[in-house]
Length: 114
Image (cartoon, rainbow, N blue to C red; front, top):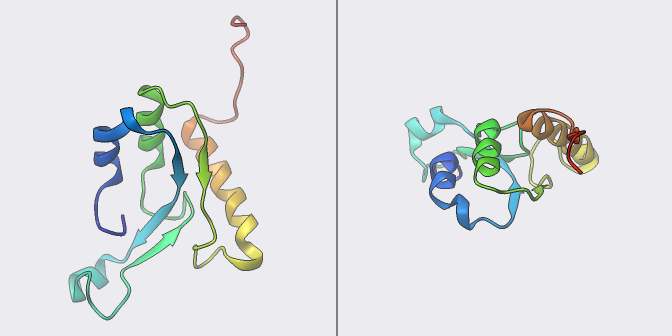
């Protein structure tokens, strides 16, 4: 998102080759982009934890799962301008719960499969 590239479109193209996912998000200030472009004097993007940015994580998880990805998503949080320092673990927990919601909730094993 920092380069204004749609992650969902790229994921559809590359999902069969993905072996690891970093849970990272971004918030784009479209007013700043419209006013000064991406090279303007005003910052136009902020790195965020999943759930606090503009990325559609429900689509991302659906695409990953439907293409066989069953591994984890490592949440990156240290760069979030709101949930950093003493609030980083709070933000990480919010991001974890948000990603669980995006995948459909808490894991429940299928009772008839061994």
